[in-house]
Length: 169
Image 1: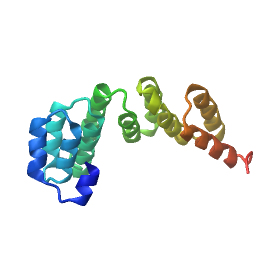
Image 2: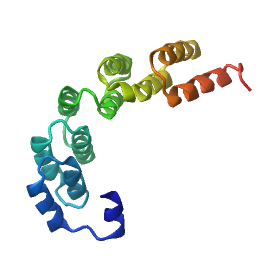
Image 3: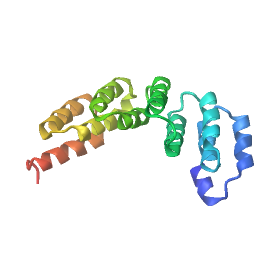
């Protein structure tokens, strides 16, 4: 769909028809929202039909954040709802943690490690390592992560930590 979108002018009527025929396919809502003056309404409809789509939750929250009219508590509630409905999606957890107060981020990332799908755990560990304040804490997290999960991004984070300590050239 992304390739079609780039090569041809998007047909709004086609997307609306596709949504009517396939209301549980989240990509159609995302494409239509990208080409609409009212993306919030389209994404709300997408959330009704695809409540477990983390992509739609994130797109909706980003749309709300751009308007800058909703209070922090409302945005936080939207992130909580997204985490509850899409507990396995790393992106939902990572953006939720980013929105949280700094002292709550580590706690949220710990929760994410318990909930996120195993194949996406590496990115959560990487973010937690990145947010760690001290070098020793980063190395400890790297060691724990390497035992827990086999992901290339963890090897990279570990190498960066060792390089910063001067233990690797």
